[in-house]
Length: 116
Image 1 (cartoon, rainbow, N blue to C red):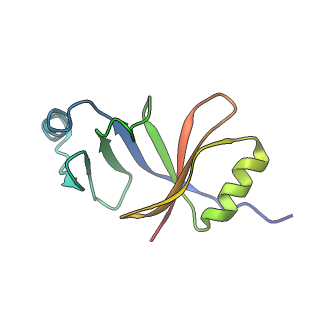
Image 2 (cartoon, rainbow, N blue to C red; image 1 turned 90 degrees about the vertical axis):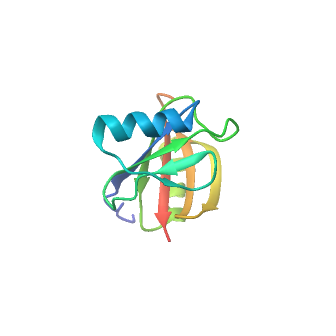
């Protein structure tokens, strides 16, 4: 049996109705600096656990989306499915790499990313 690698939480994506208001709030409350990745998405780029703001109604999740970083996305997808997770968004590319999303047995939606 292949040993599962230790993954780490590297990102938290927050759905928002008003990206400008959300950016102002987090900047004022915590000093976060955001980089815009289009008109409906902005993120901190500290290199630590970053925060993304998703304002695209067709892309945003119902709740905060924790994102776990892995080295091998396909292996992580297979492990999630074997463990009983349900894929809600198949592997897709974005400016920071590739990722997929799933729900765990309790219904929590989680993203998994392979940077690149």
